[in-house]
Amino acid sequence: MAKKIIVAGGGHGGIVCAAKLAEAGFDVTVYEKNSRENMGYDWTDIFNKKSLDEAGLPMPDESKMHPVYNAAFTAPNEQTVLRALEQQNSGTDIKMERRDIYDLIIGEAEKAGVKFAYNTEILGPVMAGDRVIGIKTADGDILGDLVIDACGCESPVRKQLPECCGIQADMEELEKFYVYRAFFNRAKGVALDKYKIYMLPNGIFGIAWVADEDEYSDLLIGQFSPLTLEEAKAKVEHFREENPILGTELYRGGYMTTIPVRQTLAVMVADGYAAIGDSAFMTVPIIGSGIANSFRAAKILAETVIADKTETYSAETLWDYEYNYQTKIGFGLSSLALVKLMLGKIKPEQLDYMFESKILTIDMLAVSDEPGGLPIDINAELLNKGKAMIKDKKLTAQFLGLAKSMAMLAAVNKALPKYYSRRAVQAWAKRYNALFK
Image (tube, rainbow, N blue to C red; front, side, top):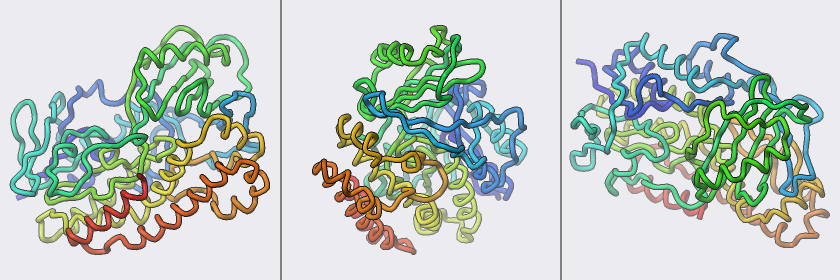
């Protein structure tokens, strides 16, 4: 009898993993709170198309993929701008409507035999001792052999796991990005930069961007501290004054969401349970992009489940998923989480100085979702930019602190247990999490 796999939530990674498991003969059902037509935000996403191939997914139709423009980064004073001299994008980044992404992966999952139960509200896990044996829904309990948690960063499954599972329930301060995204008509005019990113702009503890498209203008406002819809809307006019192409007619979007911007979850498996995608905080901490990493994680998790000849799907047999994801992808993302924490302590005037004195360069800011960590060597940068940094002793101290934290993270990463032992894993997770306090 085929083992029953429950995918809780319609996250990208969960659906792709579901497809791979169904192809291997598992009985897989995805339970999703939204209706099919309301799957995915009404906006575009940029991600690395190589992740599609890595996950064994087909390439989308050319008409569904749109070009990605160079980003121009603007200092808090909105005077100093860093621009690339040449095209940064290697041709691997693509932009797609999120609903087109869902059409692609849901189509592949359905072809593989995955069943979908839409309009199903998930309330939490069903436990038998310290093992997850199913999910609680508004329609009753659903039991299975393995629960794959793809409910997102506020997952009711992960948040209600008992302490004995050893999995962090909630995010902490500065680990969540509050995002307002809106698409307006494109007003007349010429934009100097097709994709302009503002750093700590106009009293925003975060970033904003204005992207100039042929048929619309795209505005994002996001910050690390709570941001209400009313507060976000009040800031729109400032960007409209700075960018005349930003029209006043709202085409779509115009609402808030939250995105995890932190290190990968320290422990993402338990007996009968595995977290993936935003549920496991697999986004790039500085830019919030997580689709590519979710695709990559889906393949790793599916291979781990298929290889479990004991068919117990315990923390011990699922540990290969965690180990392989962390060592190949997660630890690189975690180094960027340390950078994000440092940036959270920098004042706008310090960031202005870093732009003006060329401590920051376009290569340092152009973070992507390619596996790997910070695209620079902090110690080398300290030497190269030492003369400029020495003028700001606090800034120098912050970079020295970052370099020290990077070294400590490297040591902790090397200590990740190769094989599962609850005591060893929990001891390691405690050291790992302490680095981001």
